[in-house]
Length: 147
Image (cartoon, rainbow, N blue to C red; front, side, top):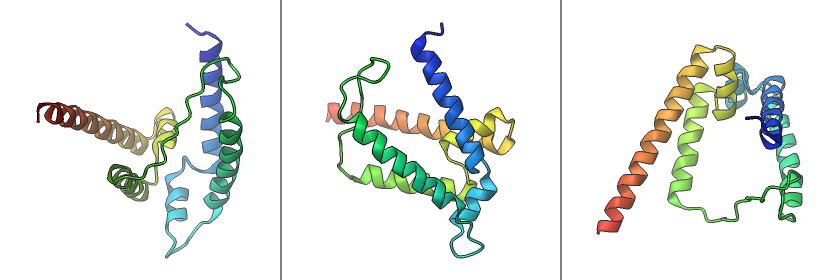
């Protein structure tokens, strides 16, 4: 059922996906060109990222001062600032995957919608990685409780 919150979530997703397409983030060749700092570097995505960071800083600053969203829902802003081994390893794995494929999660969904085989394979591999992590976490928590 489409309620007000679902409509706004759908609109936000469509705007985000359109932004990814317009910025070139859904084109693995452009992303790989940006990541190739030792070769034919394409700096265009640096401007996209700088713009996104600027918007994010303002948005999170304003959102952090609110208890409720503009839709009246509770705000859920992460407060943890702890950098641990799991965060670093996860970031490294993300970076390696991004560097190899030129795709990250948001653009993978856009590519799936566009019928891209590479995007579909990436999305399936990403979901498999998430499932493996979840299975590992369940195993780790069970083992930790019994120890």
